[in-house]
Length: 374
Image (tube, rainbow, N blue to C red; front, top):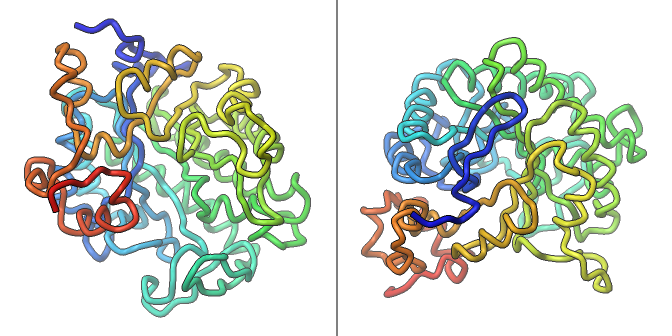
């Protein structure tokens, strides 16, 4: 068997042991039913990818009805969601992977059609700078507090469904990031204004999730947080803002930090003179108080081992695990030459790729996923 560092086990401070350092990150697969209930196709998709990785994280599951961001999205808003979520968790854990449910609220990154006639909501009534976006309604203070509780309720359902943990989705321009960003948050109450006040919502969500986990879950239940370090908008989140938030998140009790980047080693989007990778700047602040998950176009074993060499604890592979569910198994068997780095339409049934996911992949991700033979 290969002696790569990424094949070594890792034990969290809470005692949870992960069999290796490879993570399947949360990815949109658009295969849930219209009401957000997990479909059998979805269960099989995750089962096919659960054999090799140490941790498997679901695509995002909305914690409130107004938090739905797209069709085919998972829901964890009601107790009726628990039975199929239980089947999903069991499939993900069936071969030794840790099963993590990602929980989120889309905020303004949705539309009236998806919300069945309801207006999108956000920190402030500020429209996103993307095509076809709608102006959201500003959440009242009572509604903000209710959404925080919704994250806690979703965590309790994840525990009841048998997941090994949850990942709080504080990245990719969704609601938690909207509260942290001076672009989308123009409030002048406890939830907005200064950087200190804009940190209140993400920290409150993390604290509520931790509180529920401590009350209802085993000690080894994992609470992660996914973060986007920067925004290109002006005003927008800058790296210094994120480096101020991270210690607050660690203090709230998260068990890992997942840094959402397009390329693992990318540098600042806003300062072209800065040549230091963003993950190195974050690593200095985190200082191994919690493990970090690095993601971003990691494909080959050498790419992943470079992350380990740099002292990071986990590496996440997204696009590569779509087209090669047995990546880890092939590395362990010294059979790297058979690893699939391209996706052919003839592979779809074997890979469990549903028609909604296939349509999604053929869109903006066609070049990144390396689709061939069309």
